[in-house]
Length: 123
Image (cartoon, rainbow, N blue to C red):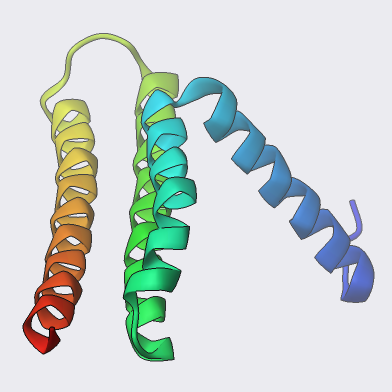
């Protein structure tokens, strides 16, 4: 099979990306919940952020959560594909992915808390 290049490669890559987003939407409830959080908090970020950097931090932290969730879901899918039987390394891989999601959520909460605190302090 000939490798795609140029615009055809970009079109194929975009198609694979959309397929991945569709799969996350259909099969991952955590992704749907985090996407809903992004949608609901976007107007709040636009209202709360006083500078473009603050808005970017607020929205970027939520997008980061989605990115980590997608990677965690990919890890889980590969582990499940390899085998459903319990294995120490399979469990560790899933736990590490879950820890990454948790840390991204904590980072988002820290960023949102810092911006809210800063806005509140400014009066």
